[in-house]
Amino acid sequence: MAHDQAALRPTGCRACGPGQTSGAEPNQAATSPGTARSAPPPEIDAPEIKRRAYAHFTSGRLCAEVMVATVLETFGETDYGSLVKAASGLSGGIAGSTEELCGAFTGGVLAIGSFLGRERPGDEMRDLGVTILDFKEKFAEKFGSLNCGTILDGLQDQGPHLGCARMTAAAAVMVAEILREQTGKIDLQTIARRPRPKVALGTCPFSAGN
Picture 1 (cartoon, rainbow, N blue to C red):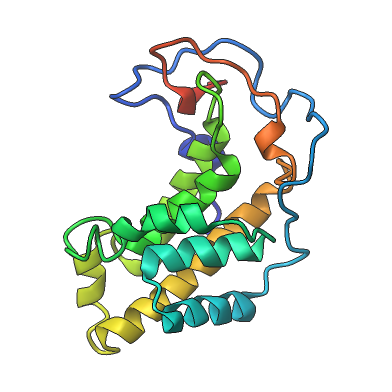
Picture 2: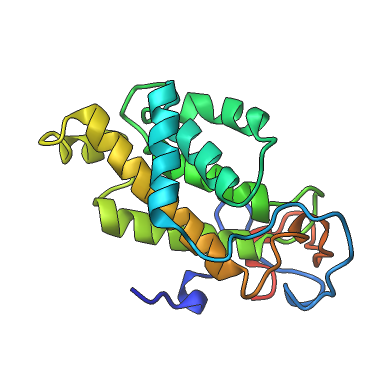
C-alpha cells in the first residue's frame, strides 16, 4: 500500500504545541563526515530476518527485545545490549499485562528511533515522526490492532507463543523494509552526525519544516 508522506507528516502534538520551527527544511543540510554507524543491507532478505527473529525467541527473548535485536542486526549493529535491556519492560503489552501496546510495535519504534532519533535537544525529528507513523499505519493494517491482547485474541488458532513469534518476525521485516526505503533519502551510516535544523523551545520537533 502506498503511503502519502505528506499525509503521514506530523502536524504538531498536544504535548509540544502547533509545531512552529526555525531553521532549514530537514534533509537539506549537508551530511557531515563521520564514522559509519551502520550500513544498510543491499536488499531486505525477509527469510533471513525471520530466521534471526525466531532464533532470538528460541533463546528466550520476548517480543520487544526480539524486534530491537533483529532489526539492529539486520543493519549491521552489534552493540545493542542497552537498547534490548530498555525494551524488556515493553514486552507482552507492557510487563506482560497484554493490556497495552504490542511489544513488537513498541520494540519497532525503539529500533527506528535508534537510527533516526536525535542526540541533541532542540534538533528536529520530522523524519523520525514520519517513519514511525508509517510503521504504525502498516502495523495496524496488517495485524488489525496495536493492542497486545487484541492481537493475541486473533492468534488463538496458532497458539499465543507461536502466533506472537510469527507476528513479531513479520513486523521485523516490516521495520527493515521501512528503514531500507529511508536510505533513498537519508544515509543511515551518518544519521547520528547529520546537522539538523533547530526548533524553538516549546514547539513540536516532529513537525519541523511544515
